[in-house]
Image (tube, rainbow, N blue to C red):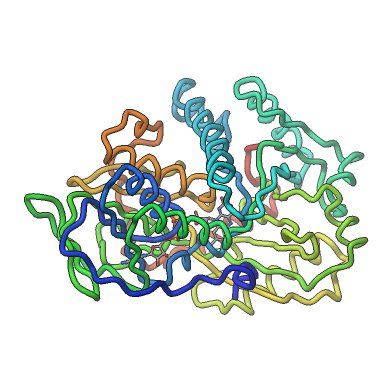
Length: 425
Ligand SMILES: Cc1cc2nc3c(=O)[nH]c(=O)nc-3n(C[C@H](O)[C@H](O)[C@H](O)COP(=O)(O)OP(=O)(O)OC[C@H]3O[C@@H](n4cnc5c(N)ncnc54)[C@H](O)[C@@H]3O)c2cc1C
């Protein structure tokens, strides 16, 4: 069970009849769907959200809660690939999205343990340190984010691990309690008038003259507009989308409570942390500062939560040998979503709105992209985004079964061993 569920387990919601008609139907009640629902319901639209699990039970209550708003490629690579104007615009929208998340939490008074803690990324080689220094300089020059490098001699202020060759701090990134955050979004969505149907799978949909008919296990509804907000949990309800979104299992563990002295030694700055690896690992203190929570893409489909957890614990002990006798109290899995694009997706197809593909960085992006999709339906110019795109191409030879995952993860592991890793701050 996710550690987060100790304080905020997803709840069944009272069963409401599926209305025959509504303005907007949303498939998926995570950050994306709830964000869209809040914006639409507050603008007076009649909204129904469907989730096949309990609302919030997908990635939105299972993640690390690090508000990174990462883009998979660094700023220099984004400029090289998309040109200077678009590369910078992608990163600028990231700055805006992170700020807007803070505004939302503050204005709505959401009880979700948000702290603007900053994030430290440890470099696994000297080359990575040099690259990170250049990327940080570029980010500061264009976006004024106040990032700075921490040389190896100084890194004891950031981490008790001797594994890194220095690192970089991003003060604009924080942490929240993801389980509480999604519960608070559910509360705000319902208070705003959205109708939430939990444990109600959408089984199919079809285009009609005045919108879409959406079929669910509890009846059908006709909606003028439709938003897909299922991200990594997309299933056979939309076979076209399932060939374009690749769900990747991601696993997390929480340690048993550690002594305050040990926590101070291992994580002296109390920040969210990451590494310059292809097989990215991220870790953070729990909101009460007593445990370390660590996540990574080390799990495979079919691997149990306990097996994935044992694998992650091995990595944690390599990082912090002091933890060799430490037990893990929780281990859990969830699904993140990738596509053939390296940036979040926001597009329309046959009149329906599609979102997702946040590449494991959805705490900022999912809420932002959901809001953008809603603003588009409302006809607001604020719905425009640099992430607006055409429908993405299908992933070759893929129909929802990630048969290629072991090979891809193995390749990324090899690149890490060769010190190739990632190139972004
Ligand atoms: C272990 C883990 C750690 C992560 N750590 C971080 C992090 O530290 N920082 C960060 O920024 N991001 C992180 N992420 C990513 C982040 O959690 C996701 O990007 C984000 O939660 C996506 O939100 P969403 O609303 O789009 O999707 P989800 O929250 O996954 O919701 C999708 C919902 O769609 C529903 N659904 C699917 N099909 C149907 C259907 N046919 N009918 C009805 N409902 C359906 C599912 O039941 C699910 O509840 C992590 C993810 C995982 C799994």
